[in-house]
Length: 453
Image (cartoon, rainbow, N blue to C red):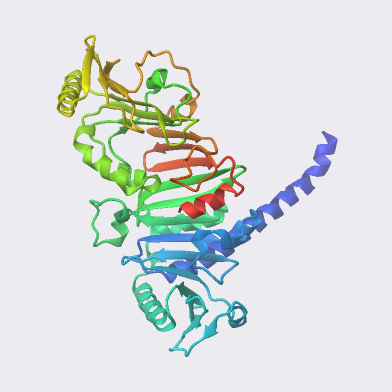
């Protein structure tokens, strides 16, 4: 006790200095971020902010990140990519010194007022605003880049992104938390919104922050208005994990959500679109009228063949709904099977087997019917005796997903990815959180995620 008491003042002072230093660093990053937000118009549809110094501290070379391709020649400090409504991408960063631009192979053209375009041999142009201390970077010729920078600067002067209090506050929190990558994406990129487009404060955004925790990267996502008001997805309820009794342990993907008939599919689809392609979102939208009849947990699981990457090894789907709707679904499936020449055989009162023609990548048999008051569609006859480790990731959330692929699980003909995926995702209210690792990759998870985003 005496030894601890003697060292306590020194320990306290050390901790205080560390916290003060962290706060000062965070404030510096935040101030740089403020300058950048003031230079981006509020009608941008996507903004990705990179803290290059923090990336370097994590051992990642910024030049390797796809996210920084429009930030060259910036190598330190805070910079951003902004996507405008017409799809134009432009980098925004504190203005680099003229000698650093010259050293990087850029040559200056004639200035127009406060704006000076610098262009390199690859056609990348940096337009330096000497008055604001900001540089816009884009893959355009000097004259076109100068015009674009002028238009963006004028639009930002009238209504900057920093005027959206919710986005500005969120970015400030992310900067001070030490997240090296953060940003916001307009919901209009993924799905229509019922919010008024004439009021920027009511526009809806998916704000995200990416950080690194050991071998995992974490992604925090929030659906919010420009004002900062959270946009809660209506019609969700807590997942009931009973369905896991039917899910084999070797499934690679397990996804579950607790739904009610009041589910807001626009808002849910916007979050799904953050991690899925537009084709999947199209399927969800097409199935929306039927999905709205679900009142309870809906779950999907599938696996791939370890010896034949890309080939399905099993599929399971379960959704709680009224018995009459289950019976109607099975009846409709039987009629469609008969029209297609497939064999559809009842197995007792509650289950049927669909035998399919031999087609590559398609299971030869599917089972469908009622199990525990749920519609079940599966490549195997569910018996309720399965044992797996998915429960901790599913319990207590409105929606959750587990994705586990070993290295080499993706066929080389369809993907150059040679590493695996270990992903847990949870959704509660308006917030989603993911923890992801890439087993077998020689890059940090943060770098792989930066390429994806």
